[in-house]
Structure formats: structure tokens, C-alpha cells
Image 1 (cartoon, helix red, strand yellow):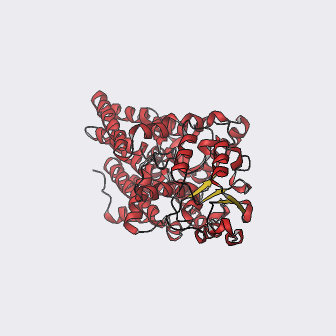
Image 2 (cartoon, helix red, strand yellow):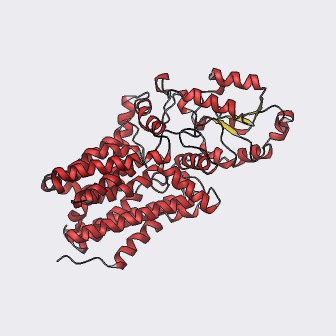
Image 3 (tube, one colour):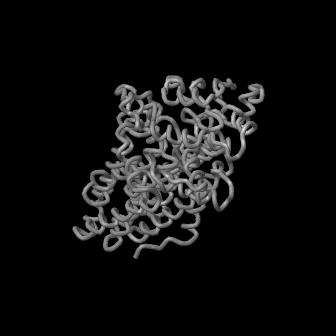
Length: 485
């Protein structure tokens, strides 16, 4: 009978899920623009707005509701709370995974698998591994889904529900539906696959409880082709893909080596896990952007394949694996202490202070561009109905996309929101080249330019290329010097 894992074993893994994110838990700075984008939606929810109606993004609904719940409980918009929630969810998944492997393979294999899982989920650059974005909430749910699907029986129904919730946290997990069906068929044949599909439909259907179903479906799936296929440069995509794969392997060398070492002996017995890996690679490659956190989707199945291989390897190989895990863990923690070394975003504080000085807490602010950190820093309601302007310009994931990538209806949504709730100020970010909107000045949008002219907004230049268009009658419109940082 396999030796059981102790509470101390499981507690150590759970603690590691917090310790490996500790610098991020101590920092109130946004590690990733997606965090700020989620927070913009969450603040709208807290103020009584509706997701995809009063505030839209091409992303799923669960993370904004998690952020909103934390904002309600804490009375603040600090990102450290959601990061703690992400760590606790990961700890839960790590405990369940370790106990399940302990049940089937024994304590030694389970501890190796658990350690590989925890370190691998953080083994990315800080903005990819330590933030609390859509991926970080989806991975624990999907991990539990994989385990439930492979357990068989009525667990397959639970597996479907959990995968459905993972899709509501990051829609790329929809690629894994075939893998889930294969796992359930292997563990419980046709009844298991049918239960899985029933659970999956139930899990996804809960989106209707969080937002209008038609709006959820449109923003998450119908409008996605424009994002996925926007302005693909094959040469640049191949270069980015190769670099991304190399970086993933470097961070996850023990896991990749362990899984591939037993490919020949596991592709039949653990065929479903390899399908999970394959669908994860497809999800990470969709759109040919290869952002680091996209690869997190292959971590759970890859770890389940690698754990037994590493645990049963010869002693020198195990020592080498332990050394690489330790070195990776140290690198993860140290890199979180210096996140701007890997990715630097302009601090919004000075500009936000300028806007706050010339506005009231109830005044709305519109930001032309993709700068959600500013929307959070100004602490004012967001105008325009969307977290950024990419939907109306066709800019997509940093690409200067064609007009084919403009989201249908986004222009109308933006103008309807601006007309109904005119902002006190419109911030044109196109003058700041670091924010990627140099090709899209606010004046290039005819409807928006006409709105600004008809309403009598006054332009005032600010530092770093920003232009602030103040509403008629505001102190900064009448006295431009008042808006100087």
C-alpha cells in the first residue's frame, strides 16, 4: 500500500504557493496591465455596473468578480488581495494533486510531483508568473478538472464543471475540451464522457449568472478572431515562438526533461495527458503571440507526466532536478523584487494626481489608448465603456492591426457611453510612444474628434507626450496652468 502524505508535506507545499509570490504580495504596484484591466472591470461591478454592458473587455468574467469581491470586502483597490486569492487557489490545487498522486503512486512520487507543480506555476518572468490575471485563476481550476476527469466515476461530471469554470476564467481552456473528453472516456468510457460534457455545459452556463449571456459569448468568442489573426508577421511570429519555447524550457528544464524521457513508455498508458499537453500547446500558439503566461496551460499535464519519471530517476539525476528546482525558485523570488528589469510600464502616479486635482470623485475619466493602470490610479469612474481603445482602433495585443480587427459594435458602444456620461477629461496617450499608440492619435477617430469639438473640450499638454482634453467649465480648462504636474 502506498505511503500516505503527511499534513506537514501538504502544508509545506501550500506555504510554498505563498512564499514564491511573497514579493508580489508585499508590493502594491501592478505587475501586469491585465491586473489593472481586471480591476477596472471590478470597480465598475462594485459601483453597480454590468460586465460587457457598462464595461467590456475581450476576457472571461470570473476574475473581475473575484477582484470585485475583494474590493467590496477590503474597501480598497489594492492588487495584493487578488494575488493572495490566486496563491490560495493554487495551494488548494497543489494539495489535491499531491494527495491524488500519493494515492496512486506513493509519497515519494507525490512529493516530487507536488514540488514540480508549485515551482513550475511560478517559473516565469514576474509579470507572467507572479501577477493575478486570468491565467492564474484558471490553472488551479483546470488542474482539479484534470484530476477529476482521470479519477473516473461521477468525478467526470465534476471534471466537466471545473473545466467549464476554468474557461470562464481564461477562455483558451476551451482548447482542452477534447482532452477532457479523452480522459473521461479512458477512465469511465462513454458514460464518463457524457457526464463530462454535461458538467462542462453546466459550468459554462453559469456565465449567464455573471453577465448577459449574449454579451459574454460575443466578447469572449465571436469577437476573438480579430484578435487572434490580427496582422500576423510570420517571420516575427516564428522568432517570438522559438524564443518563448526556449525560455519556457530554461525555466522548466526538470519538468520538460522528465516528461520527454518517458514519452515512449507513457504515450499509450497516459495518452490523455499528452492530449492535454498538445491542446495546451495549441492554445499557447493561437494568434502567434506566445506571451509567457500562455504556456502555463501545459504545466499541469506536463507535471503529472514528469513527476514519476523524476522520482524514479537515478540519484545524480534527482539531485540535478532538485538543484534546478531550487535555483528556479530563488530566481523567481529575486526577479519579483526587480520586476521592471523584465518589463517596465510608465508609473501613472503624477498624471493621475493632476487629474484628481481638477476633478471630483464622481467625475468620469476617459483614456484613449491602453493604459488601465492610469484608470485605476485616478480613482474616478471610467468613461467609454471599455478597458482600452484597441477594440475601436484594431490594435491587437501590441500589433498595429488592420481595420478587419476592429470589434463590431465597439465604436457605437464607446460613443453611446461617452454621450450618456460625458467625461471631465479625455486623456490622449498617443504622444507617449512607450504605450504603443503613436499610430492611433485620438484625432484619427472621426466620431471622437467630433464629440470633442462639439462639447468644447480644451487641450492641455502634459509631461511625457500626454494630452488632456478638459471639459468646458473645469478649472483646468479655464486655467491650463492648473493642470501642470
